Image (cartoon, rainbow over all chains, first blue to last red; front, top):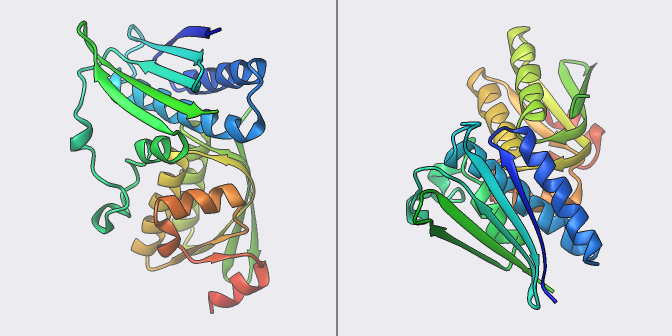
Length: 136
Length: 115
């Protein structure tokens, strides 16, 4: 049986903590162990921060829509913003020596390192959705 | 309630900042930035960040460590890290920043390295 939890949060920094708390509750309710919680927590924090900062650019009228789904494959996280969109190919590699001392740009690297699948799609009515899966 | 508590102590000409809490987007990162700026303004440019009490750090927090490192270097100083938790060590490894920072497990060894 697929279980789903949805929430919609305003585009402010405080929403990162709210999203992480909701993710932890969902993961615990669905019996995911501590080894999953840490990865899910990090991925949710980074993806929601990106949606707030880079996607919606802190425009409080633009919401961040988050869905947690307990699937056969594992814990799925979907984060949707209403920004202008971007191409993942344009995101610099933070581990490239020329980027090592930059103070930003590591969120996507963390998401990819701790979740088993990460993918982005554009929405027909604007913005981007990132979908991540932590396999059972 | 602040995400992070930063206390300061002196060991010779090295300033040790003991961090407790979370270094994350928002308050935590800003608090670290302000502490480093203040120390540099006071002419204290040998800085040891004790991260033993940092329970959580995100990419913004890692970015703030990098900013602090470059800011201190720019002032002709040195910033080093002490007592990384396994999680922070893993994050610095993933970001290839373990090659950038000097990291120590023991305070005495860290302090000696500033000489």
